[in-house]
Each structure stands twice: as structure tokens, then as C-alpha cells.
Image (tube, rainbow, N blue to C red):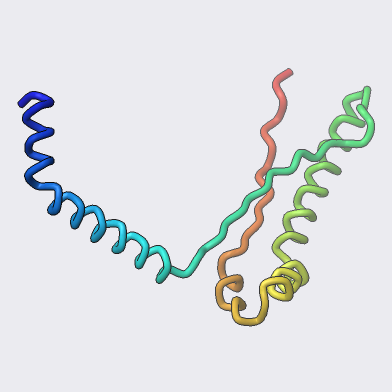
Length: 114
């Protein structure tokens, strides 16, 4: 088929094309308005020692301190206090939405190659 054939077909069937477009757009709008919005967010943190250690013992101690900080930050993010603050901002109607969907983790960093 050539462009002229498509143009002729569209000219003859314009009503069907318009109806299908309107029905499809209306269905998409209805679905969009009837669906409860769901929000998601994520964050990644970089945590390091405040000073650069110079000897091996200090490097190990700094790495352990950093890992402990990361773990405590993940525990804090996953705490009831943070969930309560979120619920207070969102309102009590959204308690069920927030209750089971929050999570935080502190993956163990792989050792740096030497």
C-alpha cells in the first residue's frame, strides 16, 4: 500500500479511527483516576571515616567503625520513629500503606583490593 492508499482509507474510516481513539483515551483516563497512587523512593548513602588512617590497625578500626555506622543508620531508617513521622506527614488514612512496605538494609562492603 502506498501513502495515497492509507490516506484514502483514513478518509473513508475517519469516524472509526476517532471513536477508537476516544474510547481508548477514556479507558486510560478512567483507569488512571481509579487507581490508588503508590509512591516509592530510595536512597544510597556513602559513609566513610572522618580521617584517613595511615597504618593497618587504624584502617581496620576505621572500616569497622564505618560498618557499625552504616548498620545503625539502616536500623534508624527502619525504626518505628521514622515510620511514625512518615505517617504523621501522610495522615492516618495511609497507615496501612506505610506499615509493611518500608525497609532498610546495610550491605557489607567488599574488602578493597590491595
